[in-house]
Image 1 (tube, rainbow, N blue to C red):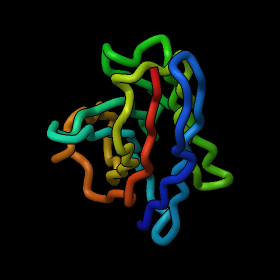
Image 2: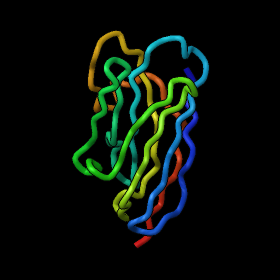
Image 3: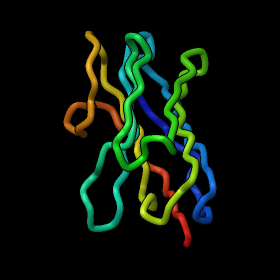
Length: 125
């Protein structure tokens, strides 16, 4: 499956952005999906995930209550609604997917096989 992330940009602190991740290719399979981010000089970190089975949604503590992950399977697209953005949210955001054969919460990059190219989010203070 191929993933294309979009929607990044420059926003002031307290503002909102919505990221999209469009999937193409072998979308006839079931996939768990997630968002990660990587700031300069830092490791890639988990942001949010959503399962195929039962539509479970889970978040890192740093974004819980501010970000919302969702998916529209009819459009083969996943979203990340980001509210109350902070300068520390500045990073390149990546979407990821992994074939889901059983319910599983994936919070590490190693658990995802497919990756999008990343979209830059910059939050000014």
